[in-house]
Image (tube, rainbow, N blue to C red):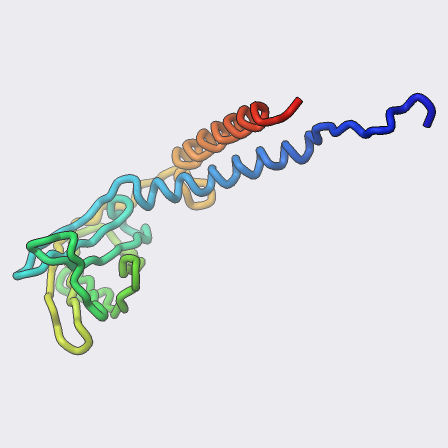
Length: 188
C-alpha cells in the first residue's frame, strides 16, 4: 500500500448514471404519449336538455374498430361548473335502429364516470344516455355521431409512432436537463 493515498477518491460510476438516463428516457417515452392522448385535444360532445347539460369527453376522434374511452358528465345548464349528482347512468349505442350495446355505469367519486366503447364498423350511430338518481330518472340525452373507417397508423406497442417520437424527444430533453442540473450541483 506504499504510495497510495489513505483517502479514497469518489469517482463517477458511468453505468449507474447511464441507467438513470435510460430510465428517464423510457418513462418519458411511455408517459408523454399517454398524457397527450388523454388530455391533449379535449374533444367533447355536449347537449342541453331541460335544466341539465350532458357532456361526453373523449381523447381522439372516433374510428371504427378502435376502442375509445368516453367520460360522461352531468352539470347544471345555468352553471356548467356545478356538477349534478347522479348515482348511475344507462348508456346504449344504436346503429340503424339496432341496439349494439347497453350498459349501466356507476358514478365514480372525484373522476369522470366512463366506459370503453368500440364501434364495430363505419357509419352513423346514436348514443343514448339516461342519468339516474337511485331509482329516479334525472335526464335522457341523445347524441348522433358519424364513425369513419379506421385509419392505419404505424404503431409500436399500440401507440402511434409520432407520439412515441414526441415522448422520446421529451425524454432526451429530460436527460439533458438532468445532466446539466446534476453537473451544476456537483461539488468539485
